[in-house]
Length: 186
Image (cartoon, rainbow, N blue to C red; front, side, top):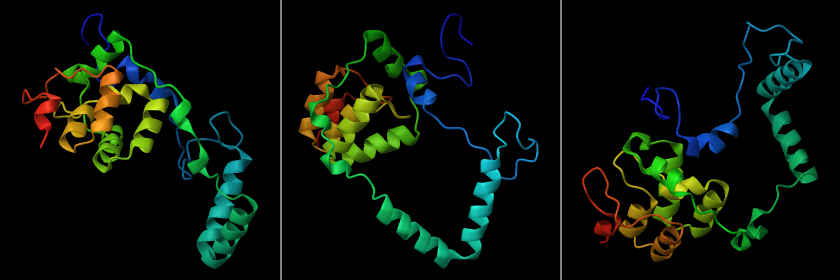
């Protein structure tokens, strides 16, 4: 580990701690190392879940009918009426921005893929929703050092360029090849 820094193998930058706190651990059904009723999650709910899973596996038609009946009783929430446009996006502090722009924090992962897809498609709503939940994504950098601002320029998403610059994404940063975001304009 570097002295006094956050970078150590197996550790993540402080700006990602909020995302990591929201993760959900899972347990395999075949975890024979835990006893029923102990504090590690081996509850009767596991047995009930396993029984239901096996019943659905053995009778897929019954499972489809049950799922359809459940969908009628509990229709999915209509998220299209959710108005996140009135919610204010949070701008990162200079320290948080520095962490996200550190080349040691750059990498390809599910978050970079999701952000790239939203920017590439020009899906402003999805991108804004991501930023409301995780403001650090505005400063996310992929393995090649590019991030949302580079992609917004590359795909001509001028509204996203404006949004990102308002959130403090610097236009003078460079990627691993020395290219600035505006160098990506076609």
